[in-house]
Amino acid sequence: MADDEVDFAVAAYRSDGAWNVVELKTSLGRDLEALSQAMSRFRSDAGVLAMVSIDEDFFVLVRRQSTGTRILLSDVTAVEESALAGDVADLMDLPEIDDDDDPQPGGDLDIVADLGVSAVDMTDLCDDDDAIPEDLLLELAERLGFADELEAVLD
Image: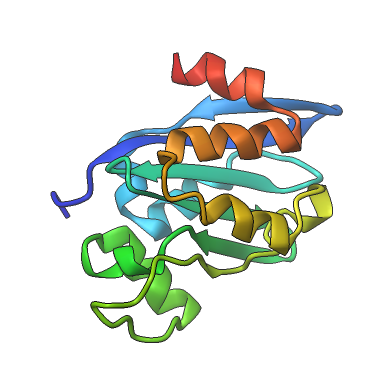
């Protein structure tokens, strides 16, 4: 798993109507099960959203709610390069990827639709090939209402 260079891992959750963003150990960004378990310590009516940026190449979103866990991989072609992406692909039962496949998101594109970012918006966000994951996750955080909190943690 040394191939996975975790840029950052954070958890975002709402408490008393305000967003909180907490930095997580980067080692959690290498293990999907450990990440999900770590998220259980945060309580929120909207669920807890983990954001993991890998190797300035792709990101993984994990949303843990009382109804279950939802996952999004920003680029399914990362499956061959990353243990975390492979775990996501296995769990989500994503189809096999060919070497000549184009980058595309996989998993639950509606992961934050109830918070105002639709599957179409999420697809558009993931399709920005020129942006690094940090910028894309900051844009997502802006749309969800916690960009300032995320920026403070990342700085």
